[in-house]
Image (cartoon, rainbow, N blue to C red; front, side, top):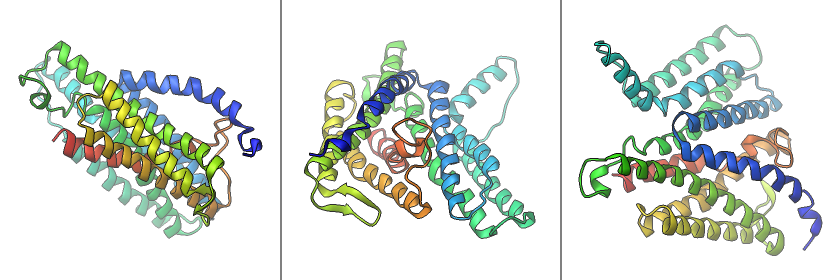
Length: 317
């Protein structure tokens, strides 16, 4: 085993420990705290994505895309805001009519798409096709997909079927507190399974890797590392199910673990493809020893929307 492969490990660990503590804390708090955490990650990753596009000669509408991306992230906490606004106005005798959450998201995306096209109509900078494509792709790939993780957290308690998991259809303070903890632990478990997948894929591949996984895209990744990562993701979710996520069935934990183990690694490869196409090693150098935010959370691009779909339409259906 080549010890030089792990020379940057102390710096990576020193940065990761406090970052993980903050992520776990805000995931358990949920609500607007968790929203702002993911919106921050999403905004920085989107900025980095636009930087990759600029290396290919594109001129994405960065400021406009970042604003639109933040609003897209906000659409996933819209239901919470809607309930609070309704309560505030109704307490003052004012009847309020608002979009549903899905309507709000669709309006934001449609207005964003139309605005990008109209701006490029009058803009004279580079290729209009390339500019519009990268601007829209960034919001869809980063902001929309990262935002689904916010909605996973918001399913607890918004969208949580109390009658399915409790003897009565009424949720008192104790039940609501438990549901909120389940939501926090679900997010923490998703992050933990991604981190364990990455860690075991890295060490397993560095130690036992012999067969290249996708040499054209990421020459250092191996099939052996991918198998280690997949097994670690499954095991992490099974441990989480046995300790803090007792609302999940065994098959649910296995499916979520498989989503992380397979699609998390595919998300990593997709970002590697983007970076190789742009001719850069990292999306940025904002995190010492880790590269950019997109580098650290590229797995969420595939994992977050798929886990949301599974939890909302299968587990909580």
